Image (cartoon, rainbow, N blue to C red; front, top):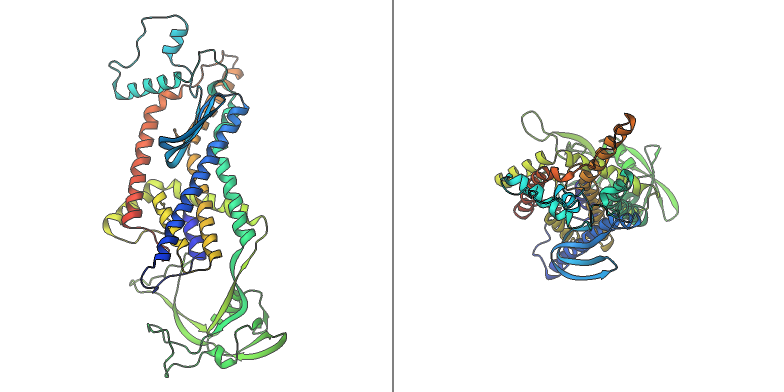
Amino acid sequence: MRAAVRVAQVTANSKAGAGTVTVVEVIAFVIGVVLLVVGLAVSIALHELGHLLPAKKFGVRVGQYMIGFGPTLWSRRRGETEYGFKAIPLGGYISMAGMYPPSPALRRRNGAVTGHRTGRAGGGFFATMVQDARTANDETLLSEDDDRVFYRLPVWKRVVIMLGGPVMNLLLALVLFAILLSGIGVQTATTTVQSVSECVIPSGVTRTTCAASDPIAPAKAAGLQAGDVIVSVDGTGVNTFAEASAIIRKSPGRTLIVVVERDGVVHSVNLTPVAVMQPVTDSSGKAVLNPDGSAMTQEVGFAGIRQEVQYVRQPIWAGPQAAVENVGAVAGVVFQLPVKVWQTGVSLVTGQERDPNGPLSVVGAGVLAGEVASADAPVLNRVAGLLSLLASLNIALFVFNMIPLLPLDGGHIAVALWDGIKRGWARIFHRPPPKPVDATKLVPVTFVVVIALVAMGAVLILADIFNPVSLF
């Protein structure tokens, strides 16, 4: 979600001072939330489809393909698989036969052995959990000799099936980023002058209108006009406004020759930037502080030019590049997830401002989607913001599901790879093939992981409700 906040902040304009929230803004907010929920449901559906298609291709029996959790709203059986939707569209699953090897009890039954223990009595809480998992798994098996089961597949096929879901999310993110960057484009400050300030308002003053005592803005005094295209500044050709601004900022009090194109005619004007004090910021835009805690300032040149902003389409490879960068950023957040959630909990209790690059729950993502949709900005800006949020959500789904812990997809991949290592080791030393890895023994670890995820999710939801990250 880190990238989603950053991109949405770029694409949505500030609403500071907008006044009372209108009915239209409320409706737009709700529409934004609904669109995100629908987009998330589609992402989950594609994730499960990424598991379903290779599972069926490899002959595994799939009993259910469900989007959501809770009570079933609609379902229809086609062949051996039941397809449907459930009430809470915040997840999904497919039910494959034989995710784990048959339990000893099933093997004994198939071997006509009687008088065995079920494993429930006196086994303790975790032993009961293991037995319950084995019983549920046994219900998907027709018999121990059933070949259409997941655990009997070669290792590479099991890995492909479990990788299919996260990879679908990654591919969807690639498509969304490609649409965002190469289809819509990136907002870029051009060298075209949008407007020229009338005066220089002293720093620290809250008013936005000129007073009689305010000096005339250097750009106004130089004769620059809206629509002028800046060609060069101080003899240096410029292709972006950032290049022109950099020269102006480092030249306070020095007269610069600015060449502009106006109505097809080239003009030269003399521009003398005035010296103003501005806060020093770091790469993330935060103010740099002095040792005494005060904001560090620096003298820069000011001209009073507002640039025209346009969407500039990026090369086709920009989308995949952005997706890869986002994978790295989200992976960094996930790697530090317990610490980040703890910090979020502290900010919730103390009322401190949250880290905008920290983790969010689905509730927080919905709030951001609503704010983007109701922002006082052009429709294209809002569409771009929603696309960036959905793309980043899919990156988060990809990274999160690759964590090598059950019940996540990465945990099933790790079990399959461990099974492959054991079999490869046996072949190398000419030993009998080992029994399939019984992942039901890891149910206690899975239980702990689920409890931890639920607890962290609860903290994030509470923080997103009572101390949300806001774009404005």
